[in-house]
Amino acid sequence: MDEKELLKERFKSAISSAVKAISENFDLQIKFSNNADSNKNSLNLPEIENLKNLQDFTNLRALADSEALKIKYNNKKIYKQKAKLAKKYLYRYDYNKNLSKYYNTIKIIL
Image 1: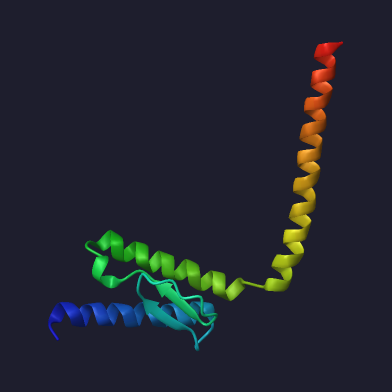
Image 2: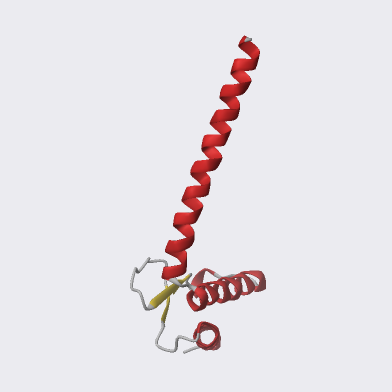
């Protein structure tokens, strides 16, 4: 293994460790591939081979940290509860918006 490959493997290991620590899920499987895997206990990140400059590596680290925080603070019970509430308010907003258009139309006619 040449030095470049060794650095990439170390970077993968560092990213994987950081994601597991941030998410507090040490059983999480981190894969570096472009294939989307819907496994509940795995996270797919972009391939290291595609990274060319320092900004690409920084963006990958930011993406990994963001995904780790999503895993840590994801709560399906709260999400479902808030989604129902949001749906109710969106319905009211649409209703009021349509009602407003209706009244404006009546004003123009009168």
